[in-house]
Length: 316
Image 1: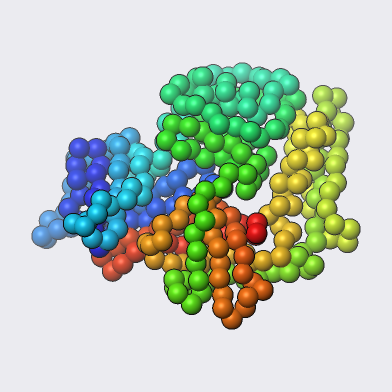
Image 2: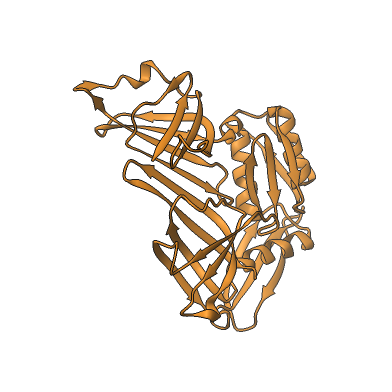
């Protein structure tokens, strides 16, 4: 087990653990680096060496003398905590730079793409990759950061919003896919918290309520007759196509036959959100299938490494 972690101008020589969490459902990829609170009977004076905003580069894996260690995380120090006998350094990816105040403004008849282009012009240094169609009658930015706007858009649209380097990605769920990685219950799955669900028992009816400029309610309903009902409210949205799209996005993650949950493997094979995991089980061939990877939590310490993979909808 080897690691290569730099924070600012310092390279770590000791480490208790590091946990990297990546998800298309969270705005930020994060890392938590845990250091011992003391070394050689002396307390570590971390604050005098590193600070909030310092660049962080994390590599770890097996046998660094044989191959270059893969990059697991790049970002910035978000906070440092030293109150529980150890030192925890919490880090965020490039989304850290979105925590800047925006000018107060009101945008009318604006698409999500136009809204985020407006935000990125203020923040500077980022590009946008957006193929998600969603329209606001009015969007108010008041005493908000770029992060606040992204969070609101993500909550209201259910779009996958994430950063890759300096590009902000905004896509419908399951639209962007990466590599296919094979996991077999008899070979490389250490622990499983997966549950198999039958779509015949997973019926839903989604009602999405918006409001027009006069405050009148606009509703759309989609789903399977006889299903469990739920309602989503989107003030400031009156476009019916937008409301229907929001309902469809919600139904995608609820109604399908297949596994849901997570399972844990080792550092190899490497897998990332948006990849496709092909699950194989020799004892239950009918449960074989391909699933979209929603999140990966990677843990590393001297005792070993693991990846906990959370899956989304079955797509094949």
